[in-house]
Length: 239
Image (cartoon, rainbow, N blue to C red):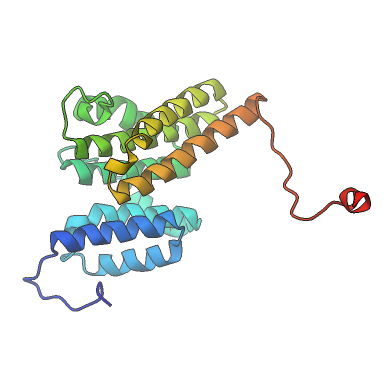
């Protein structure tokens, strides 16, 4: 009701409303409430002028929900619209990170190795090198540095997953371990970061661990194990 209320053309979204909406979107994603997330992003998109300042957030969370629900037709329309346009590197930090996260999601969904390398290996280091500054050599404020670290954790996680799909297990392990190392650095300061960043970190950490486990299984270092939800006949005889 709050989001769908009627707003006049002169109204603007307040900073508090903006942060609350971003937190809500992240909360829905964290709890896998994908259908609700799609409904909310559709509603926000219908009031495009009013919510224009968080349009990149809306696109990212909608894409994430569509991928989780495997809604291929909607994803293809979204992909064609986004990937056929040039990435605007002049955006401010947070909108640009949302755009890059969105493209990262689409590259993973399509297993697009070429698109990933073109944007993140060749273009990004030239156009916005500070986004890859995990050592904070540019002396960014803490709030911006946390966002940079979270982005790089996701970037390394995506690289690891793409290596797995291409059969490059050693490279996959290396990238996954880099992602875990950065995650641990943030975990040590988790009480000093925002709740939204905490939720993002937990999801990224889980993704990095899953990549490492997948790579280890392929290599033979780890194995899948059976999960018994009820006693086996042998266990019942013993009891």
